[in-house]
Image (cartoon, rainbow, N blue to C red; front, top):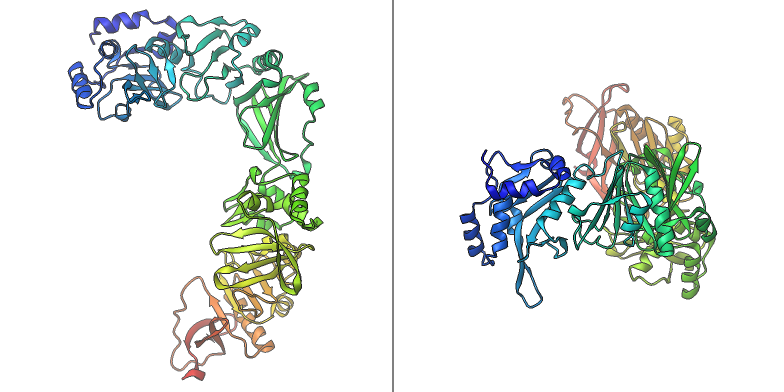
Length: 604
């Protein structure tokens, strides 16, 4: 393919390093608009036809990387229907156009739209300067082509404030003059690249960067930053293969004291959520240089990252499953692991801040309420949001409500889908209201942990237990004795009980103020239909007037013969106040029962 002279001259003027890294040259297929198409595009979009645009077109139209396409590349004046050419021009405050779209750059698989001004300087779509010329941008692209994105054995350290020259001195790096301009400065050394600012990312013009494969080089730069900027120094480290290890919160170390931070030479991290703090420090051992990162919030350590030359181990002390493990059964934790269970550190506060909140509101802070906030503050799950501080943060005043028997209640959670609130009294009993139907707070569990054990899993049908039978009678103990099912202590208190074995679960509420209008409620879920039929007999023997609701994995369609007589009949209900006109009939032998639902003879 014949290369136009201006293209040839421009490519020949680039450094050997960028030519080798990118292998720039004409693309196999036409990928850019012609000069005439460029004129029509500018006229049609009412954009200025600056000479520099046609110079840029003559130098780079149709040129791209033949070594790293899609990873590190440049596309100047692509077809006018490409998204990069549909970017709006940049304007001054007075409304004058000062930069027009000219294409895009690709680095690390990400695409960055580019706009050029009348001098040939390139800008991001945000208006931030990317490079003062396309030449320096290409040279920077060549430097970073093999370093972005950061891989498992590569490291990118971002340091603040601008410290490129100091970092370069610590690593004996030389200026990369070709890639440097008024917007960014680069240095290179055999082990990596240093830069002041990042030409391909917005908002990072105040940071310095190090791309390297050596953790020891990162440590030397951190030490240089601490010496140069003291308390103003900050760092973030990305890259290395990360392994996550969820740990119980009670195993978390204590936050680093100011004295410990000084002794370890720690500097702060840059990317923390509001209210959080992070500190980076280096350690040296017989295995070489290592680094640690401690991330903290509200007086507790959330994560500790241990960085080695060949990887990073993240000890996560803020994993919500681990935070609940000491309170809930394995089966309930396994269920929570399947739903969107999140913990937001920004919705929590320290014990001292919580005490101050209660003191200012004139409310006693009991030990059970403080323990709840420590364990559940900031948790969200399946439409439930937990935490006193998170409610206050959203503008809901901390105040007491009155419950049954004049109990003093504090709001601790909210169910968004049904508009219900959760409350704790001073002893830790959990209450819930139902505002959409006008029901005041009623006690549902002796503690928040008993409720979390039961609320999503108790009496729930599963593939291993697909049959369910419900009655508005207290029949749990009788069923548990008959089937020899042990009690689940995690889910049992004075308000409800759970009995559990692999093939049968029994759930009994003493009084359900919402679903069963204050009546008792018992549910048995089982793996076998024969167990459901036996449960019917047990309940009817104890409470002949009981009614039932049945769920089966398949519709009941096994119509009996006219000559068959049922061996058992049980009235059904459609709700606590709605007895059904239908009844459940059981046919066949005890070991192979068949079901049919028909009109009750008492209603004929």
